Image (cartoon, rainbow, N blue to C red; front, side, top):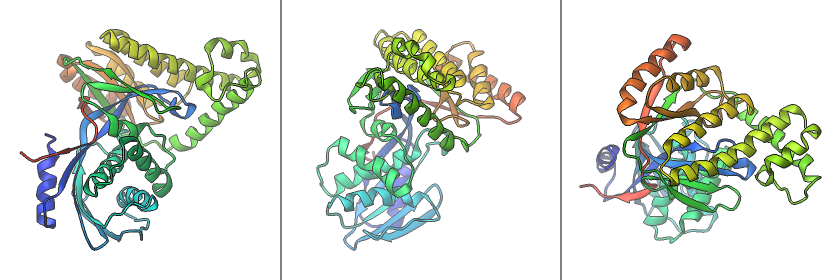
Length: 387
C-alpha cells in the first residue's frame, strides 16, 4: 500500500463524515520517445510508485469542498460555478468536474482530501495524477460507467481547457492505463497502445532533478513544433500522404535535405530517429536486453542535445555524471527540456554510489545538489482499501 493512503484517510475522517472512496493515482516517467507526441509518433512511459492519494465522498448539496493535505489549504466552490483560484491547485480539480458537468453527467458535489509523494516540479506529472485520480473517483462514486479512454480524454481536456496548458495526452494516458512491471507503448496518432514487459527486479529507475525550472520550455516548444511542421510542409509536396513526421522515413528526409533549412532538417531527423528508437527499445525489452535499451536512452539524449537542442548545461552535467557510475546502463534528459530532470537506468546495487557520486559531481560543477528520486514501475490509477 502506498505510504500516503492512511494519512489521507485519517485527514478525511477528521474533516468530513462518512466513509470515502480511496484512490491511488501515480506519477509517470517517460523511458524514451521525447518530443514525438505532437508529431503523432510513439512514446514509452510507465506509471510510478510516487502517487497522489484521494479520499472522496459524494455530497448532496452541490458543494465541492477540497482539502490539500500537502499544502494545508482548502477550497470550496459550487458545482457548475467554477472559477480560477489564485492557489492554482484547485484549478486541476475544478477542470475535471467541469468536464463532467459539460458532458451532462449527474453529479451532486464532493468532499475530497488529497495529497501524496510525487515530487512537485520534477517532471513526473503530478498534474495528470490529480486529474486522472479525480476523474476515476467521480466515475466510480456516481456510477457513471465511463470507459478508461473517455476518462483519459476528460482529464486531458481539463488541463487544456480549464487550466490552460496545451499538454498532449501521454501523461493522462499512462496514469489510467499503466500496469505494474510494464511500460506502455502509445501511438499518439491512433491512441493504440501495447503493454511492454519491464520486469528486471535488479534494476531501478532514478530521476535526478536539476532544480532548474523550465522557463524556456513553453516558448521553445512552440518554436520546435513550428520547425517540425515546416519540414512536413516541404516533404508533403513529394508525398501528399505525409501528415506528420510520423510518416517520414530517414531515406525520404535525406533525399530532400537540400530543400530544408539546416535547423529544420536537424529537428526532423531527431524526431524520425526517436520514433525508430522507441520501436528498437520495445524490441530490446521483449528480449530482456536492458544493455541495448540503455544505449538507446543514451542516443536519445545525444539527439535531444545536439539536433533538437532542448537540453541544458545542467541536464548534460547530470547525464554525464550518471554515466560515470558503474552499473548505469543509460541516462538521458526527460521532458520538455531546458531544465527539469534526467532519467537513468541503474543496477539496484549501484544506487547508493549513484546517489553519492552524482550529487557530488553535480554540486561541484553547478554549485547546488540535485534532488534524486528512486522509483519503481507500478500500476495505474486504482481504488484501494485500508488494511
